[in-house]
Length: 274
Length: 256
Image 1 (cartoon, rainbow over the protein chains, first blue to last red):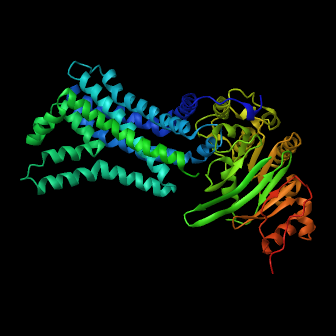
Image 2 (cartoon, rainbow over the protein chains, first blue to last red; image 1 turned 120 degrees about the vertical axis):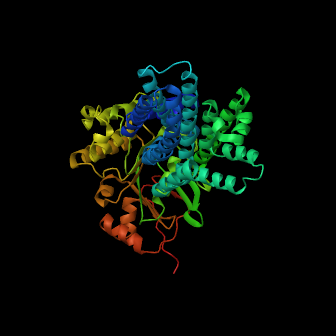
Image 3 (cartoon, chains in turn cyan, purple; image 1 turned 45 degrees about the vertical axis):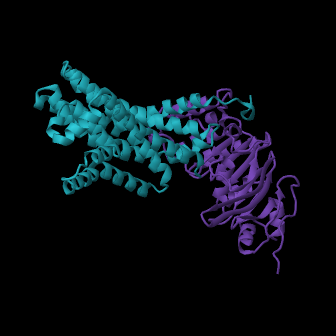
């Protein structure tokens, strides 16, 4: 059969081919392995120092909320920029752009999710720390962490598709991480301080939902039962997110943080000139 | 015949292609030449479907638009700077690309002629630039394309590999493949090209056989002829059909 007369597999099959090979490449990257090891070593140290699973999880939560977005966004963006020439070669193959985009997204995101799961869960498994108090919290931390990986790799794709220049794109990725991971909380805290006499709890709820890291933190802190430390705001948050329905809504909001950037990036990838 | 009709492309306010009309005949090697920023890369990217023209169309020999993913099964592409996933082996790269075309039995002729099999089990990051270039050539020829797009193909190849590569290009041409070539190596043009399309400021200023170019430029060598083209303000050719008349006279003097 000649190349011109061949049949081309469907979008799902093509995306799977790309995702499988891309995953293989990503899983062999040193920084992915190092990331999983850092998470595992940190978890192990915290378990040894804190003495109990729940206490270690509260401490690990803060590490996860900074490290997972950092790795997914910045190293994800760097990895995508490095693969640009090969992406162009793939674009010249008989494959629809959407199938290629799905394959590339899954090929980066699934290995990072795997490394995150392994890095967080392994110390708890090895230290036999999975008591009834720890297991549900660990499961929730794992769920929220893989959602965060999905969010920040989607943002990495959006940045690399929108910003052609590698140096500028990586700058945008670093700024986005700083803004969402560090500066946003400072701004929210400043607003809360200035308007402390006003009934701003509902506004704070909305502010949390506008930042996936804060959304993740809120979900986890409420479930880790430290909301009492957050006073009246904690009570409002608990009434909003503390129920099962509230938890599902919060997780859905986090999922929307994956879907919206993903869709914007996919649409831009379909249309952009390479 | 690859038909390029009235292709226009601008990036922002900058017009890069200003209405390209060109027909590439099967069984001929056409070199796209021109100074930097003439629009060569953009034209090639349009042909590969990487860049969408603002207007006009590019159709392959079977009449399909290159923007259709399935149509690109007929295209073999060798980029100027080949890059592959660092942590995959050459073999894994080939397996991935083979899987995108499950009905095509891959052609291993060039792989064997380059004696590349021993290198395919190593991660791509450990391969030399020349070996990566050979892998890129193998991929371009592997699926028996009816259109081969070769962008500076011999950069990085040693003389032996370059010789093997050139003979593969000539064999493909003799088998009826349409071949589009860009190169800054004039000696390579002289050996490989049957036709030349000269781009300047986004328009085709000359399209015709190498013999016609030499005659028109009143030159004895290709370097001299190309230098003449770059210095002379020539009029755009509205529609050039390369290969249809191999010795066609297509250069027109500019209006005084």
